[in-house]
Image (cartoon, rainbow, N blue to C red; front, side, top):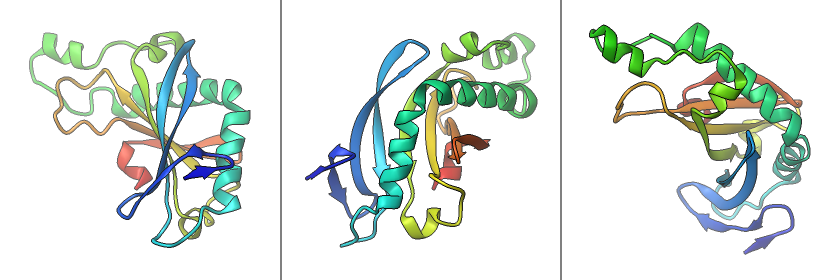
Length: 165
């Protein structure tokens, strides 16, 4: 199916609609999966389209807000929260990341999650999540990456990816 805003999308009864878009993060173009929450038989709403369009329109500025928020989250909450006892190994799990430029080398766009309208309407204007994979935290087989909630063009929450679901 072709949607006027999301382009080519497919419906899956477990996840809703899925499509792809391309964004540039820190100078590197990346293809990103877009998940649009819809129950069986439900159409994509204008509310969901508006959130996606707002993200794309403001992406150049938004990527800096996202990087700043993730950098703060990493250094103040996540860094050193768990990991190996061995000091040398611990340092490889939790590198010093002090600048946006350093951070952008350590995160990779994974997906954009736009919840179903009835879930997301309790948030601010144009809410959605941007999810990232990350290069820190060791060889964590249960890696949960990083998620950022955006509302009204501002980052309002940063945490593990599961906050988006």
